[in-house]
Image (tube, rainbow, N blue to C red; front, side, top):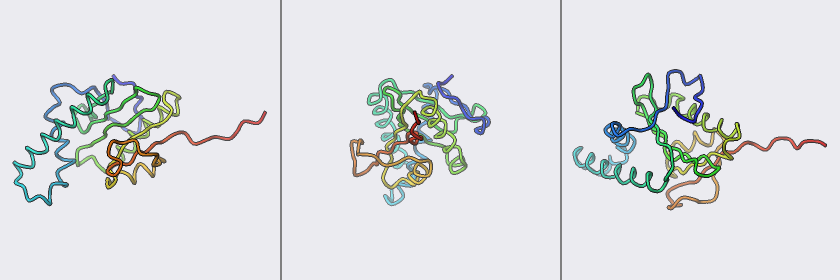
Length: 177
């Protein structure tokens, strides 16, 4: 059970807390996201896997210590893991730490639906805004911009590599007294 209300448009998509038994899936997912970056290295597949598994371990440790109190979810379709969604609600900002999908589910609107779910948390008044940090060259920046996220002052530890983005409710009309 999650604190999120999944939109009906997401169909048979569900969220569940990450369990220890998900480690293998999460490593594979991480590899699928980062694999293209290693193409120029000329490394063997075994070397790439060893490197990415080490990087996954570092990232996982960073997320769990740097975002104490965050929520770590597996995105599932008909109970089959297809991605991960990590969010931090420690402040009034709903911070998207990570969203990743398996390759065959990318580019099909699922990410848009999940981001809309986070935006709904703001619309419902449970959070003030949705924030995230994204690599400067990540194509997902276009999706975030299309959904109304704007770049804000650098907040990331490596502002040259990452862009801090935020989405908040558009200002409404001023009430007339």
